[in-house]
Amino acid sequence: MIHAEKQRLRALLRETAATKAPGDPAPLITRLSRLEWWENSSSVLLYAPLPGEPDPMGILHRHPEKEFFFPRIKGTDLELFRWSAESRWISGPSNFPNLNEPDPESWERASAGKIDLALVPGLGFDTKGGRLGRGKGYYDRLLGDPLFGARKVALAWEWQIAEAVPTEAHDVLMDLIVTEERVIRPAGDLDQADWTSPPKADRS
Image (tube, rainbow, N blue to C red; front, side):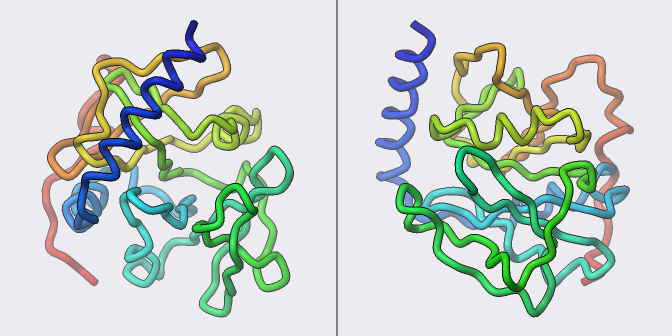
């Protein structure tokens, strides 16, 4: 029943995505940069976007004080690699031909325990932190790794926020969701001062 509902919602969100022009990620990145969690992070997991996903890649050259990491699909799991200016990209596996991934020959392999803030993509989210992925479970396995203790911040367009995302025991909830219009705080007991700070001048 839950699986069928997930598939129905995936189909609906994919249909919606096909009608949307590419969005401007700048408002999301601005909100992200005001998070106290962002200010306090030193090692950040990013992602190379698939078509329709908010693109965080502009962050790379604006924050030289941070280490950035990217995932690579290997079998049923995600491996993590540290980015550098010399890092090269390769095409993803056959089921994700539009995906750019780290070339393991030019990237340094990293442990899941190295990350302290993770930016997470998805097809859809809800205000309780539920995330709907693409059905392969790659991110759920990574985020559920006992070594992975990073705070999980989803980047999403406002149209990706569903009324409710069906969840199962293995589904990992997001700690915050950042859209172009707002920051969604699923945990009602989370102190706002812990995750956001007043606007600051752009220091880039």
